[in-house]
Image (cartoon, rainbow, N blue to C red; front, top):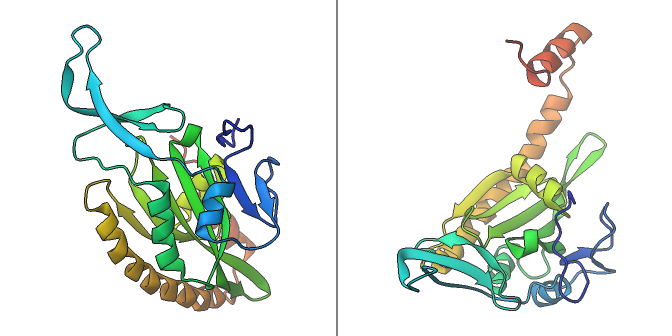
Length: 238
């Protein structure tokens, strides 16, 4: 399954969407915007992550500085982490998102879990958008977090609406003004500092509109266009 959406024990997909369905047809679609607490419940993200020591199979001794993370509702294991790794709960991630978005300033667009909950994401649609000539480009703010130690928490702006594993990867590739935080004891404190930086980043996204419109006025000939496509898209020959 390329969408990689987690299926909750209830049989529902761990995915919440506002108004529009996803291409895979999964998830709970709601007709209007919801707050973070409602989004967590609708996306079945209301569980916690803990870490515990790893024991040897024969002697049951603890392996030094090695721990495993797991979700408390199903006891499914996520990954192996070090002693300084600190799990960030889904509820804390949403609280951080609240501080960035601001009440009434954005709409929680999507929220969900991938790969049995190892990766979670939140997307909010910002109230404004980038307009290039007659085309309107939606502006989203997203946060993604891993519970298996594979990556840092990441928050950034993107034009991509995240609804699955593929769109998350696309959003990460097209992300701008990225903030990444490692999972340590101070991660919650550093989240409070990060939301100020995201406010600055939002101003930058507004400036991007001017840049795009200036680029849209530049005309290129067919020969130049072919040369550009060849350099950017086509693979290099050995």
